[in-house]
Amino acid sequence: MPRLLVTGGAGFIGSNFVRYWLEQHAGDRLVVLDALTYAGNLASLEAVKERSEFRFVHGNVCDTPLVEGLLREEAIDTIVHFAAESHVDRSIHGPDAFIETNVFGTHSMLKAARKIWLEERALAQHRFHHVSTDEVYGSLGPADPPFHEQTPYAPNSPYSASKAASDHLVRAYHHTYGLKVTISNCSNNYGPFHFPEKLIPLTIVNILQGRPLPIYGDGRNVRDWLHVRDHCRGIDLILAKGRAGEMYNIGGGSECENLSLVQRLCVAADEAFRGDPSLAIRYPDCPAARGEPASASIKFVPDRPGHDRRYAIDCAKIAREIGYRAHVSLDAGLLDTFGWYTEHSQWWRGVMDGSYRRWIETHYRDESLLRTGDRARS
Ligand code: NAD
Ligand code: TYD
Image (cartoon, rainbow, N blue to C red; front, side, top):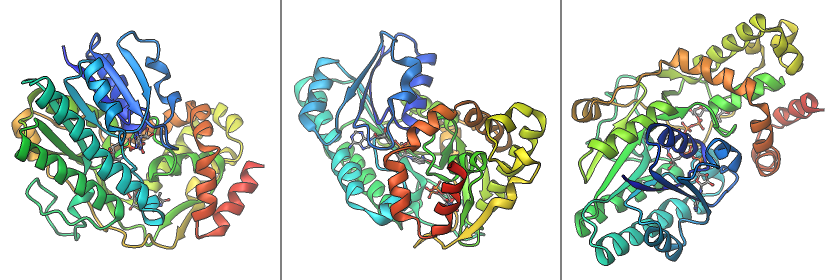
C-alpha cells in the first residue's frame, strides 16, 4: 500500500485531495506537511483529523532536513506536491514568497526525495507527483487551439513563472537523476474549501454578504473550470497509471468568460433564495433576500496588470493514456459549490477574518469595494 506525503494538504485542493484519498484508499498512510500560511487551514481537515492513517505536520517545504526526516521516519514512497503560493494577484504585489515556496520549496522537496529514495534506500518503486497549472503555457487568443503538453512554456505572471520554474526542476530531476516524477498541469479549480480570494468563492461570499462583485477589465477573459473532485481523481489516475517523466494536462472541458460565470452564480443565488426562505434569514444582506437580482452588484474594476486573456486545455493525452475525463459539468458544479458555501459560513467567515482582510485592505485599488463591504458587515 502506498505511503503518501501530501504537501499543502491544508489548502484548497490539497485538503480536498486528502479527503478524496482517504475515502477511496482507506488504510493508506497519509502525512500532510503544511506551513499553514493564510491559505492553509486546519478547519479544512476536520473530517479526517481523527483517522488513524492520517498525520498532520506543521512545517515548511523549504526545510529540507524536516522533509528528509519525514520520508525516512514514515517510509514514504509517494509525494504529492501541492504546496505553493497560488494567487496571481498576490504574486503581482509581492513575488518573493512565490519564488521562495514555489521554486526553492519544490527544489527542497526534490533534493530530499533524491537523497532518501535514490541514495539512501535505492527505492525502486517511488513517485514524486508535482501539481502544476495551465498558466505556465501563457495566454491564448480566441481562435487558438487549447494548450497541449507540447505547447511551449510562456508564463506571464510571477506566479506562473514560478510554477514554470518548478516544473522544469521536476523534469530535470527525472532526466538527470532518474527520479520517478509526473507533472499535472490543470485548469482553474473550484469547489468546497476554496479560499475566498479567487473568483468563484469570492463571488459567492460577496453575493451572500451583499458586497460588490468585482470583475476585472471587460470581463471577457476566459478560463476553463475544473471541479476539484475531478482534479483529485485525475491525480489518482496519474499516480496509478501515469508514466514516469511525463506531463499530463487535466481540464474540466468548461470554458467560460468571467462575466458570464459571475452571472451564472448570480442566477443560482436568486433561484436558491426563492426556493429556500431560510437563506434570507441567514443572509439578510444578500440582494436576493430582498427579492433583488444579485447581478445588480456586479462592478467592473480596473484590470489586473498583464491579465491573461484565455486558458483552454486539451486533455486528449490523459484521456487516451489513462482514461481520465471530467465528470462534473460546470452547471452542476457551480450549484453544488454555491450550496456548500451557504451551508458552511462558519468555515469561510473563519478563514476570511485576519490576514486576508488586511491584505484586501492594503491592495484593493477601488476603495468603494471596501466601503460597501464595511457597510454590509456592520
Ligand atoms: P492554496 O493556496 O489554497 O493552498 C496552498 C497550501 O500550501 C496552503 O495550505 C499553504 O499553507 C501551503 N503552503 C504554502 N507555502 C508553503 C510552504 N512553504 N511550505 C508548506 N506549505 C506551504 O492552493 P491551491 O489552490 O490548493 O493549489 C494547490 C496547488 O495546485 C498549487 O501548487 C497550485 O499552483 C496548483 N494549482 C491550483 C489551481 C487552482 O485553480 N487553485 C489551478 C492549477 C494549479
Ligand atoms: P482567479 O480566480 O484569481 O484565478 P486565475 O487568475 O489563476 O485564473 O481569477 C479567475 C479570473 O477571474 C481571472 O481572469 C481574473 C478574474 N477575476 C475577476 O474578474 N475578479 C476578481 O475579483 C478575481 C479574484 C478574479
